[in-house]
Image (cartoon, rainbow, N blue to C red; front, side, top):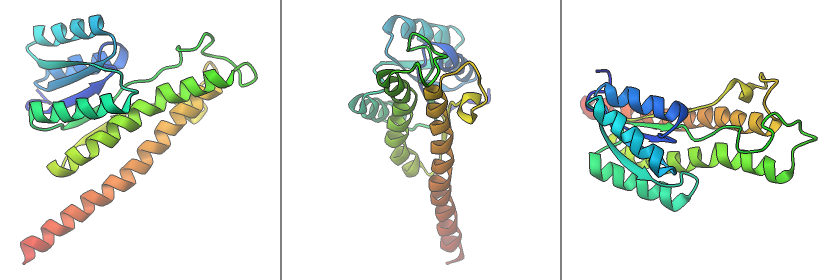
Length: 195
């Protein structure tokens, strides 16, 4: 029961890694705010979590829309009282006809689609959840990348590699930004105790 009492907001929660993560956290005592744009698969995921004794609430929403991300985060924080974990699981390479296309074969539309699909939802949900976690003075953000983001996958397109490389860079930068906030909070508490 590693996640007992914890609230996890998970995007792409109705398939792949997102669904597996939702089932694990839900099965180990966590409460799940499950986000997906496929209502049928989302309902099946919620049923699986409930069958294992977990608690989950479905959010049938498009994680790539700013208004939807803001609404989901606000509702989940109000509904559960907090958000301890954000798992940004939206992403993939199969939204274009040839996922392993060479740079020469890629169209601009395919390039833009892969960058948007893999980066935008991660930014939107992270952007929306940071104020919640700052108020709580705690929280964890998990962003899914790939070896493709390090240029190590010969099967992936350059667009997918660039997108996942962007996730890696974004996550590193985020750690510096929010690590500084955590350090400031700890210093403030230490000064308060000393006074």
